[in-house]
Image 1: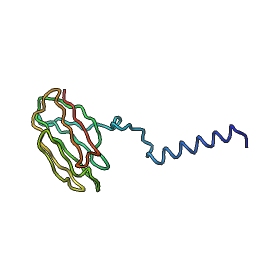
Image 2: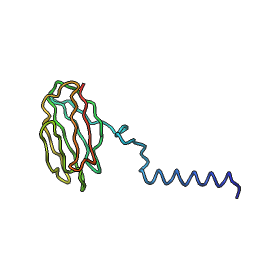
Image 3: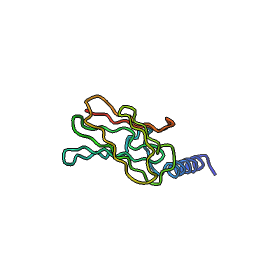
Image 4: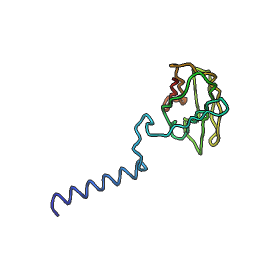
Length: 130
């Protein structure tokens, strides 16, 4: 077998392993590429964060100056991301393993982000308001 064929086979195996172990996703550690779920309904802004092995999306950009609610969605979650702390609003709670938890964020101000973190500090998210 010549070197070219060996290199091609090696590259194909590495590419296959990357696809298998990442699920085909090329998302970076900031959660970029993760779709934002922000909806304004009846004058209230709803921001949805999915919780399973971390928080996704990790960075959200939302509108300031309107009543805002954060929806934390869990689905068979069994790690420390269930223990959510949002210090700026005095929130600390163990989320259900499966379900939705609604958190009132009030009326956020421009340039004042909301940050959530798990109790161990391993996982976090931030919502920026403009």
